[in-house]
Structures are given as C-alpha cells and as structure tokens.
Image (cartoon, rainbow, N blue to C red; front, side, top):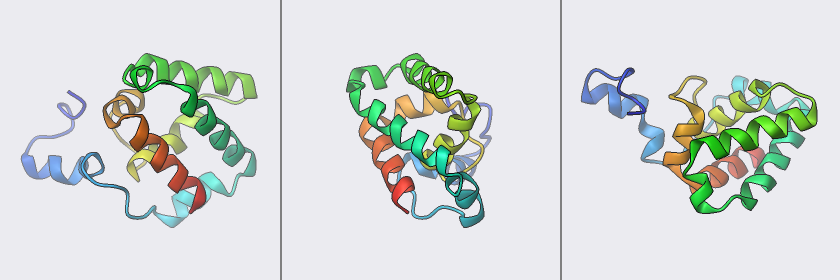
Length: 123
C-alpha cells in the first residue's frame, strides 16, 4: 500500500524502497547538513528520540500515534510539524521524498526507526 502509487515495476520497487530492506548506508551531505547544522532542530530531534523511546512497540505500529507524538512535540516546542517531519523522513529513508512518513515508520517499527534516528544524530 505504501508504494502502490509510486511504483510501476519491480525494478522501481527495489530502487525506491531499498531503505525498507536494508539500513541507510550514508546520508547525502548537503541535505544532512541542512538539517543538523541547525542546532535547535538537532536538540528537538534528540528530544523526539527520547519521547519515541517511551512509546510502546504496539503504539509505534499505529501511524496516528507517531503523528500525534510528532505534531504535539512540535507544537510544544513552538515549531511547525514540518520542521520535524522532513528531517525524520530523511533519517528514516535517506531521501527527501517517501510514502507517508507515519505509515512508513509504523511499517519499519520502533527499533529500526529509533536506531536510524540515533545514527542520523550521531553522524
């Protein structure tokens, strides 16, 4: 369902969804820097990571719960949700475009998502 509208052939699936089957090897430096050179954003992502740890694995399987965590966190920090959504998408996929972030995160699962975010923040 996540890729139905984006993929026409199996080859497309392998190239566009590789991050579903293997870890992110590296992040494109210019895009990475654009997200993490902004220190307040890095701090917000670190705080989102801590809140993500508090969600149960079952909650992480529900896209709406991940979305609520993200949007409420952003509102609490006085930033727009997109300011978290875009770097989270990049951390999860290594790409700036993907299927719906919260649905994708629920499919990847809590362990994978938090592992990728931790790697993204430490790079």
